Amino acid sequence: MKSLSIVLDNEGPYYPGDTVTGKIVLTNSEPLKARSITLNWEGISQTDVHVFSSPYKKQVFSQKHTLWVPKSGEEVIPADTHEFPFSYKLPADCPPTLNFWNTKNQYKVKVVVDRPWRKNLKEEAEFVVTKKLDVQGSITLWYAQTFNRTGFFVNNGPITLDVHLPAVVKPGQTIRINYKIVNNSSATVNFLKADLFKQAHYHARDQHTPCEPFKACPLSNDQQACRIWPIGKKHTMKVDIAPYTECTYQMPFSISKKATVPNFATGLMTFSYYIEVGFAVKGSTALWTSLMVPINIGEEEEEKKTSPKTQDDGAPPAYSA
Image (tube, rainbow, N blue to C red; front, side, top):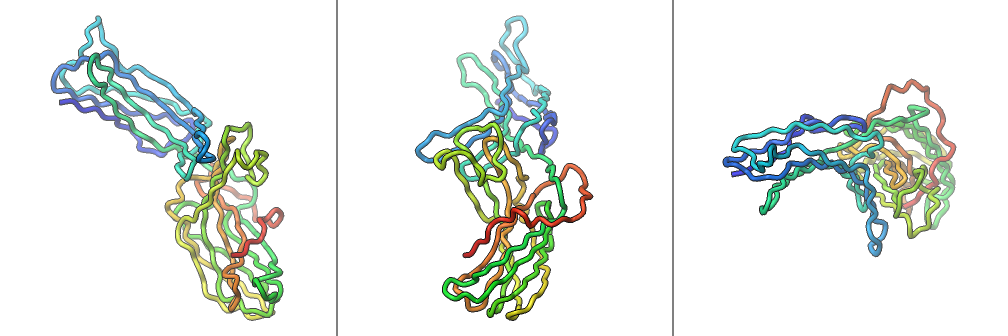
């Protein structure tokens, strides 16, 4: 009877520069012939832009360590339970673990017992790498947008949407989104909404610098791709904002606990989050009028004490659905 396992001292997540420690446990009820026991560390970053092209895989790191070799030429491991401690310092440039559409950052450790004239014993374990956010600037986002047309066929007049929300949040956190609606139209605003999305922009090959924002990507369309997907529950609030009035509201919004991958950007991929905030007009054929507000999800490196500032410049364009 033989068993082989990898035991990590810390299940993670790990940060770039951390040291991963643990042990290999080999139990054999009878002497085991072997040439060596090796440990392989591997981190990869991979994208697949098009179905007709081959995936691109970048090696973040790859190292091989020898845990055991026979002494005096005797290729035998005595019957017993054997423990082989290990440690490995992660590089400082490891992007967070990710598996979303055709993008993947993956980290694993694999042990191999090389046996002569027998099938090798193998075992592997994945571990999660994350990062802390270094967000500069205001702790509060402020976006404002005037929508001059809030219906497909009827122009009711302009409606201004003004929103405030935190710039950095954590998975599972409940925040409050502050809405100010200036209704200079002849229609009634009857719903407010907020919806969280995750987005990956990725390249067919690694670039020298990341694309932030991704809309400035210099690559041709066949060398880049973008995927966006909702995460968590859509939040709505019923309101009654009459024509030619203005109102303010606070909507509680729960950040999905599944949003565990922090914002990051490398030369190969950019991963980010957006909250789509908007409103609906009573009787309009346009179900929602909204804009996409970028937001950071993760743990900050240190407390930010910057006072709130207007973030209106460079706001994303209006979106109607």
